[in-house]
Amino acid sequence: MLTSMILATTLLALNPADASTHNEFAVDDTAQPVRVDVEIDPIAYALEGFSLHVGLNKGRYRLDLGAFGLAMPEMIHGQDGFDASFAGFGGKFDVALNEDGWGPFAGVEGGYTKLTIRDRETSMSADDPAIGVGMRVGWRFGVADHFYVVPWVGVGYRFGSDVQVAGRVFENNNITVFPTVHVGYRF
Image (cartoon, rainbow, N blue to C red; front, top):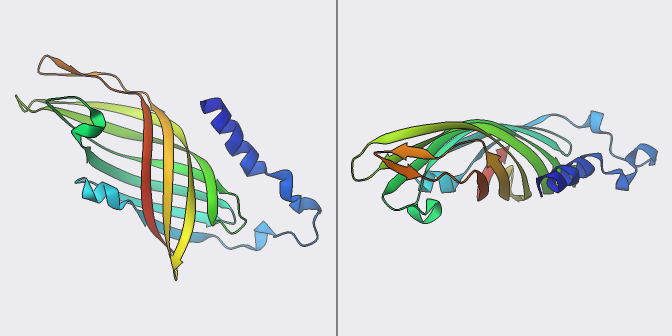
């Protein structure tokens, strides 16, 4: 599955379908300016967390560097008696289908997170720092002058381990599925 997602992203990045190198009306990427944007994830703030991402856009390509964190509800992590939260930083590289960077996109992502697990009964906690990598797909919608919304979902692998706290084990699911919505402003 991960291999096919990497292949799809690579094909999207190379996208020979528009044959822009042979079309006299093609968009010249070198003439497009580098644009900066800022995004947040309001869901992270609703879950006692934070999110701030800065993006650099050139044509259909976007590089994102960000910091994030949130408290995971028990209904998400599914393990009784534990509180779980994470914080980290990372980067994303997206390729949009449209030359102007709007609309559907696919990309790769990677980052560092520190998962903190707390046993509710004893208040003891332990951390699991790890690197994660993955793929994501989404859609960038313009909603008002310079403002936009980005629903997206990422699927990845976190190279973490189970966490032992107060003699109990929090079973870490290394495969992550992360659906969310970012709100942004493009300068």
